[in-house]
Structure formats: C-alpha cells, structure tokens
Image (cartoon, rainbow, N blue to C red; front, side, top):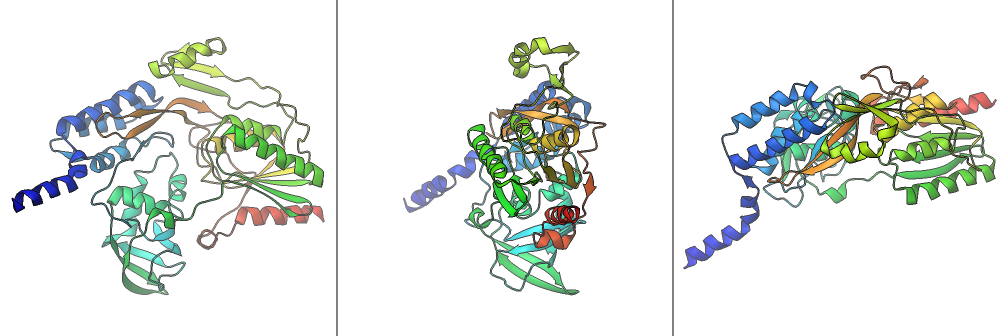
Length: 435
C-alpha cells in the first residue's frame, strides 16, 4: 500500500512532465504544420534552403521529444527574418525557482562581458570577461545562441543579447540551471566561481516612452515601441504642444529600438515634416487563404503577379498639425532599430530634413513584415510568420538598412556604462552649430 501511495504521488508530481513529452507522430505532425504554414504563407521561405533542412529533420525523427527539445530543433531553421519565429510558451524541465544566468551582459567580438552583476559574488564586477559557462567557451555559446535569434543582420542579433537578452536566450537554448560554473578574467588573471541563478523579476526593464527638455532650446523624445494609438497619439500631441509653448528649436528623437504599430510611424513623421511621403515604395503580399480577405479589400490598389499581390504606394500629403515642429530635428538610430523603427527612420531620411545620427538600422530596407500567428496542434507553441515583403523608402537592396547621415561608433565601454554616445554627439553638434 505504501509503495502504491508513493507511485501515485510521483505520478501526480510528474504529470506535467509527461504532458510535455511528444510522440514521434506528434512531433512530425507539428513539423508538417510548420512546413505547410511557411510554404504557403511566408513570402520567401521557399527560396531558402531551410525548407529542405526542415523536411530532413521531420523524416529523421525516431524518438519521443519534449516541447523544449522541439523548440531547440526547429527554431534555428525558421529564423529567416525578425518577424518569423516560434514563441516558446511551455515549461522547461526540471523546473527551478531561479533558473536564469545572474548577469546583464554585453557581447562584443564573440566575447561576453559583465554589465550588471545580479549574483551574490561581488568579485565579478562590470567589464569582467566571462570565458566559460558550465565548462563551455562563451564564444561557442554566443555563436550557438545567434542561430535561434530571429533577424537578418548579425549586428541586430548580437545587440538583442544586450542586458538581459543573453540571459533569456541562454535559458531557451541550454535549459534551466540552478547554479552556473564560470571561468572569468580580470586584469589578465583567470578566476573560477559558482553562482546561483536568478528569476525574471531581477532583470531591468527599459522605459518605452520618454520626453524631456534637456536644455532651454533642446528637447529629447524617446520612442521605443509604437504603442496603441489610444495612448501614443495623446502622448505625442501633448509633447509637441509643450515644445511649441516652450519655443523649442531643436528636437532629438531617439528611435534606436522599436516595433509595434507601424501605422504610427507616419503619425510621428507628420509632427516633424510637411513634405509628401509614403510609408513604403512597394509591398508584395504572398497570396494565400491567410491574406485573401485582405487582398480582396485592397484589390483596386494593386495587381496580381504570380504568387504575390503587389501594391505600389504613391506619395501623399501628411496630416495637418497645428503643433507641427518647425525647428531642427535629429533622429538617433542604430542596429536595434527594427520593424516600425526602421520604417520611421527610412521615412524621416527620405521625406524630411531630419539629420539621422548613429548607425545602420537592424532591418534591411527590403525585407519581410506583417505577422500572422498560428498555434501548433501538439506542442501548443505559437508560430509567427511574415507574409509580405516590403520595399521601404529609398530601398536599394535587401542587405542594407537605413543609413545615418552621420555615423557614430560605439565602444564596449559605452555599452557597459550606458553611455549614450549618439545623444552626447548630437548635443555637442547642436551646441557647436548654435555658436
């Protein structure tokens, strides 16, 4: 009887684990679903070698597999662009209360540096280089993790690992760890430590919207994600009204990162420019049941070309704004600017007098966008896929992002201490030009 009670108790405790194990047939069915969705909806999947690699994985599955292992096998094969990815929404076993690598980090040249130490080991300070984690070289770990990060450009993926990014991706790729064995280097001296993991609440969160008057004639507007219009538009209207009332002549817009509602990129542009503009030069929508209803609605503004419905955008006048900013505008951008952020920077460069300062954006000006979500039947994971190829303003090729008018290099030390090199450069530029 006692043995039976123990068995039943263990069965209950491990029921969640059992539910996470997929049969060979379930794994193949979910891979078939991924193949079907991407083959029929994604605009460029069939032009890559990923499809054949995915078929090969599907045909060689011969064992049961956990949901986490499914993610680790499939994710690297679908990260064609920054909008196509699996969302891991399952549990990782064994479950641990504090499973995360306890540092915020910076990656430069395949090397991992400590930015903020969130562990109890106070000897591992800012700027320390981590040489190995759990006996594996960090250079190998970084290269492995980059296969999992969605996106086209390497620098964009690397910067996605900044701060808490590496910590989150390490867990997704390598699993939960209660403790981490580290080899680290400081002043040419190698050291060895064991540190305990942390939970997600310990990681810092970035502020999304921010407005400040930095100097009597200079204002700063930070826009991370383009949040919902009901919040974003009143925020913008109050910001530009205040600048008009304060008679501000220099506006710095920080668009170094982002995403969100791309329709709001032209709203922001309308506050700083009265020039005719277009959100994109052309877009090619993959024709599928997923997009057919939308294509029917816009049938009069495009044409069918093989598997695509092609829409070309004409220049149009911006919305009239009583509080439109008439002074000098500077837009800060860099490799973490993606999606709607890249769209806004491209529009600002092509259709306004704004000076773009920083580095190339993380998304090419010819790349995939628009997202649809699909739930896989057995793993329960969400598959996000693009279904449109966009040709953004002034696009030349599918490798280059929006380029700055003035390039500003960023060093490892700048990243470690959050030295806003773009902003400092711009402030100095404004002061020099105002003398």
